[in-house]
Length: 349
Ligand code: PHE
Image 1 (cartoon, rainbow, N blue to C red):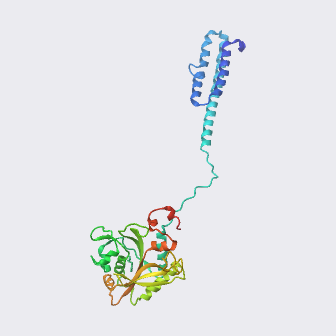
Image 2 (tube, rainbow, N blue to C red):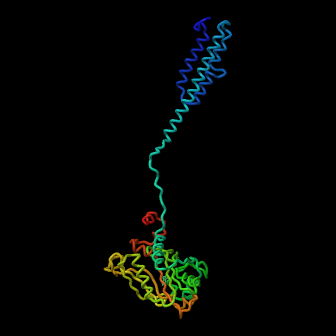
Image 3 (cartoon, helix red, strand yellow):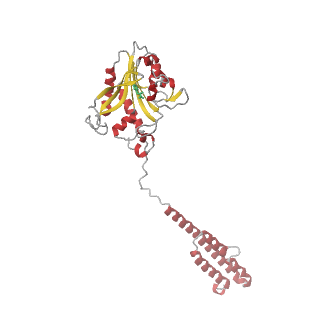
């Protein structure tokens, strides 16, 4: 049996083997690796080239060439597969290190929504009146001129209409300028029973928007209808409300006023929550803050609601929760409420 170093093709095969492994170590991406495979293992590759020379050898040396070339071939194939694995692994490691996730990091805080400050105040007000036996009565925001004005004793062309700058949908339909038309709707719904309701809701006025006036705002209307209701009842209810809303020390006073749908009518003031009546910038040195308008339901309005004014009477009041909040929190611009500025809204609740 001839030894291998006497077999030139076997030597060449070994050289190809060594060289191929050496080059393989330098290949670092899959495309180059494929080039390497074609170059050494391909149909016209280096191994094949060597084997082609087999015809020049004496017959006795040929089987050894076949055997060694098979060995080299499978060794190179194995090395190739190993290198494919190594390159893929390296690539994965790189991606993973780039996409590293620290599972111990605390999560992002979930930002919780909250109720709009006006809604919070409406709920506070309805809760206080709820404890006094008033139930909530919902009424529409788009009203007829008839309900918003006429049934409330404000005929067309009456100068009192100047008190409410109005958005007209058409000649007969308006966006309610106050919650008072709900008084009529409540009376029609409850008749002939006695009534104790509050009506919270949005109102609209055709106004220039300034720090002191908005085109939209809330009101809470109150209405009580029954027999033998007096102004003392109205006062008791409002004093109780002011004390629950602003503290047990509050004083309330009535000032004469005028509304077409109440007789007599009053403007209700509360002693200033900042200076307790001594005089300060909030109350403009008067010691008093105006909190709402009120009065005894006008006989014509009772009649329009279906109640006989000879037998029934009642009181009504209307307040603006945005104004109430402005006093309570020292907010100096009503526009904050409906300008969707989170810096403002997030301060409440
Ligand atoms: N509706 C009146 C306003 O908008 C307020 C009010 C309501 C006055 C009920 C008296 C009775 O100004």
